[in-house]
Length: 447
Image: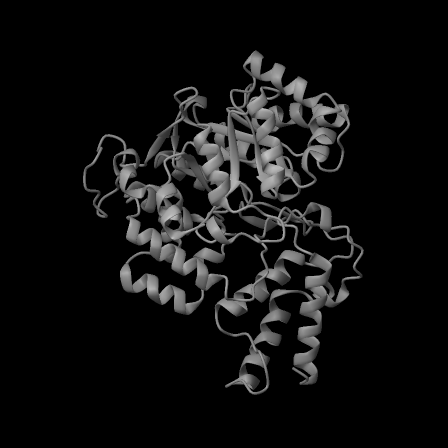
């Protein structure tokens, strides 16, 4: 896509009024004071949805008395209370998140507030068992876990991979689409949509169903950020600019996932961060990514998976003093995206769908450590590199501290169990093997 097309689709200059905080159309937004959350109106039903949504895939975790990793409910309650108090009203979860714990934690926290204060979004995450019995049970269990008798936004989870054949297997042949459409007619589902991971052709096949009237989708959730806008993983994933344009011209509301690309855009390489700080010394690098997303008027909500109070407070501040990007700023974002693609990072968003590994390997932890070392400039590349010995030691020591020895990459046997679960289509065993070889080359000084 040419740069002028990038800017044309974004239309940032025309969005200033649409993106201004509620009650201050066109007014200058001050960075001082509490500000006011930005809301977007769902054109289908008039829902006033906060532009910042709470993604419930990264709730804070603690170890219980048995040593099991469980959600810290007290911390979740505190975060949800703060979010609702400061205008966030969209909460997105799934039966698959955090080994099945996310919905219950969300239900406990949210049910302490009046139901009209928030919108619930959850999903039919029937990856492992597509039988009608299992799928319907998952659907009904979500009502119980979330302590509600209706879903505001209900999604077919992570469709796209495998195209129409996979979609029909998970949702059509088992009667689930017919079932869900009837549930929408009955009012137990207010909006029915899907989250998408896949290629342009797979997306086109799904949208063709909408266009033909075979199935009507009320909204679509896509991965969108300033890197994926024009530079999505070319092996399989579609550029967000294409997905956005196709949904925009059909008037379909968009919910954004991965605005920070699994956290990578909150911790960009030093050279990129320096350029952002030169422009906005008092703003975080993450705020640039969020402003990019919010500067597109078809976006109904931008999800952020916030693990503790610090990013929650910061993100509320960004969206309570929201400034749409100018055309020049959008050009700058494209320049930053190009620079991001020059770093040899693994496209892992830390969603943990690949977990648990049957062999105990910490797959996302290994990838996150590798990416972090590249971002922070502590990645040893060759023995000729300046400070090679220091960088070598730093990588090996930090790897052992981050990942328990029995869970490291060299224990992968390439069983392939993880491959079908990765929404990014990362060749996980191959990448683990590459990291294992890299680490061994560091130990043997053969790099």
